[in-house]
Length: 228
Image (tube, rainbow, N blue to C red; front, side, top):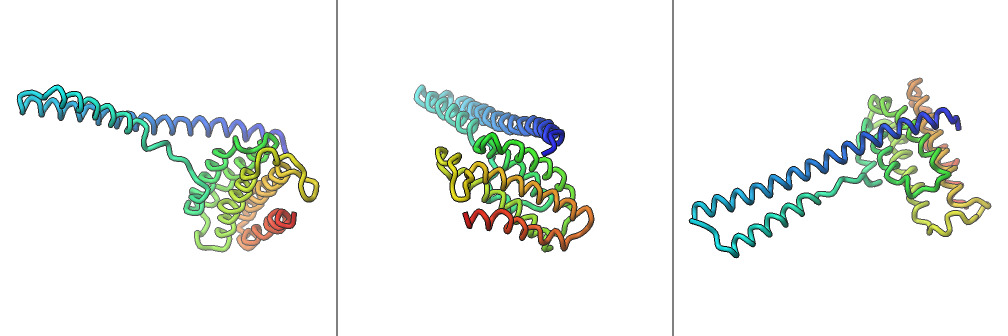
């Protein structure tokens, strides 16, 4: 792989992670603000009731305080920060698909071996490259189906099949003399190459060529993995 491209990919990833962290903190602040508003609302309601009824009993005051703090704690924790799941990729629209795939892959990065870091960064570069092209692609065409198959089926299947392997077996050679970690890196490299090829096909307007890209992936990686 071109190391300049890899370094550029990592700089872009740093910027994306910074933006993602901002989004997460923004979500948390909204959740915390809602909890404070609920807490304030309960105390205002209790104060109003006390004024109307001429005061509240000690027991009622204690129960109201406990309720207020219980509501505050619940609302400050829930709903939890949303996490993208692999099965949601198939529901993403084409303009959203590349970005959603990248977010999902980023969430799985820690579960992957260090040898896969370059391949994951390269996939990130290719997804950014193809994202604006997907926005102009017809949703119901054969080309769109192949893109969806690659990004929402083949890629998640590859990563999830690796993470299901017990950690102690991931670097142990299997059929063909390769380890699951090596097979994962090879598969990610193939997917990165296919995303780039699809992007080139889209730039040339060659939708027929794009529609056959998924068959190459299945022949090159998926079928060979099944044989192993």
